[in-house]
Length: 487
Picture 1 (cartoon, helix red, strand yellow):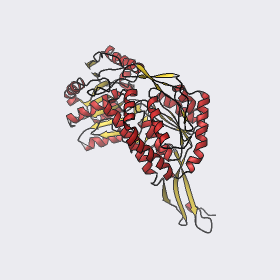
Picture 2 (cartoon, one colour):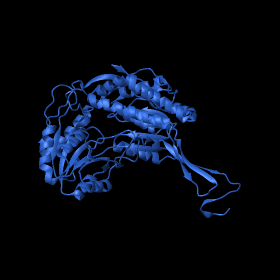
Picture 3 (cartoon, helix red, strand yellow):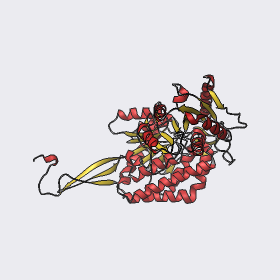
Picture 4 (cartoon, one colour):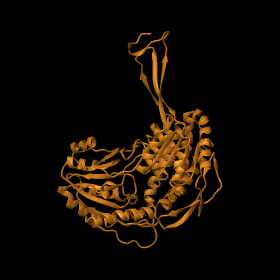
């Protein structure tokens, strides 16, 4: 059993087991972790507050050099260990776990490289004798509440790396489904020599997260459900100082037009639906297919999906692994039953999975678009609807007809159609001739509507954890006002 600890003020504290981490591959416990109490939360925020004063006064280049050491350790010492831990905790396939660590590494490299780049902009003043520019200042103490599905890349690097370079300190509360990953990442930051109190880790459930975000922090970076994200936004609205950036759920989709390459479209839709068992926030739980090619696409999509296998990550032949826990497995099965009970035409029914673990084979059905929960709500599993549309206006109407707006894949060789979709679909990320899953660390990652209010992940984290200030210098011997105002 892995023995986890909180990490406060540069110290891995005493181990205790308040909750157990369950391996989704087997359904058996693999670790024990503490659940931080109110006193521990208050103490860690105070520690981060005290450390922030000296951390922000350190040269931005020097702060970047800490991230350079973090990147080196991740690549040359911890890479294999982090990959294995991701596989054990999330059930990700080995290939997907490697990709996540590469993603984390790219973010660490990006963060330290930007430490030597401009972090403001020169702007010409209206007055010739004045110089002016905009610069970014750290907000202070940043709370990171991160999800289980990218436990290393999002919390440990997409959120943390830019936050630190900008001069903030961190209190990280990872998902209780992936505490081991957070623990290993924290070991990397500790070994890199991050000063005590700058990077802190506390474990626990949603109650601990609530204690953290309502404590004396300045900014919350949250990735998770829309419902929790809304509570965080409402809390920040009652304060004068707190800001938040929330990346939340989705009902992402691929839109396949009749002129698209059929093979490319099938591959894009398969990956978008079933990578990580459909448990990415940008996973496509629905595909919109132009009616003229609907039957051909459906046949080929189902044929390929029927050959996908799910199983333990150590068995490399499997396409994807388990659902994260029993609760999520039960939820997906409930939605599958909802579809069947509604009389929809099911094209692929999951076969029983032998052995332990939270495994579920693909479930695929076809339906006209309608106002029903299984088409409008985020399901987070290998559950896919195939929906016909008639023309580009119809496709846009269907895609936009949910409360979410995160990602969309547009499959067409017609640049005019692609441009119309770009302008009229409501999304934060669009991939033309790609699926809905194609995040890159140096691009922003976020959505609109119920999918979020900002870009708290990847390169745009810089905007979330700083505030811009204007600096104007008068070189004249007298006072001169802009807009022609007289003194």
